[in-house]
Image (cartoon, rainbow, N blue to C red; front, side, top):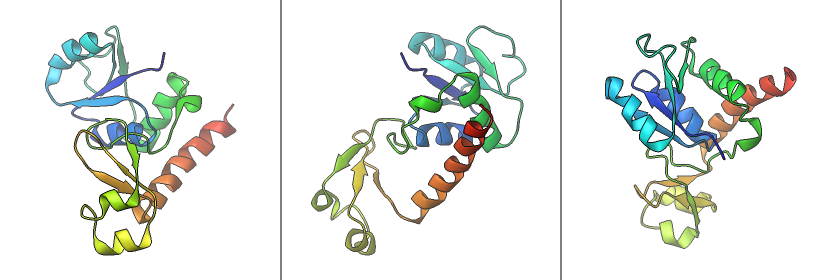
Length: 153
């Protein structure tokens, strides 16, 4: 069974990076209520909150760099083989659904529709994704992190 996580309010960027990697990750800025949320859904808490350090089901994040945080979580939970880039919505965490171009015609800018062919949509929040310049930047950023991890084996 794959690992599921919940990031606290101090780890919003890490949450997005994990979602970009296709890792099931929720976000909560409700303080220690995160303990109840995590337990209810069988999630591991990722936090920088020193009050939660050492508690069961909590992984304390020491580094302030989101890239280093991602590297740390992937290494700690051996997630390298579970990564499926761009398979989750970075806003709401739902799994993305590949969508025919014609179905997004009225949901994306004209330029985007004209120049891109591969689209995915989030069934929950209806956000549309395509492989534009942000995609290339994220692939580069994540690729750099994963490259580092494969060189340290």
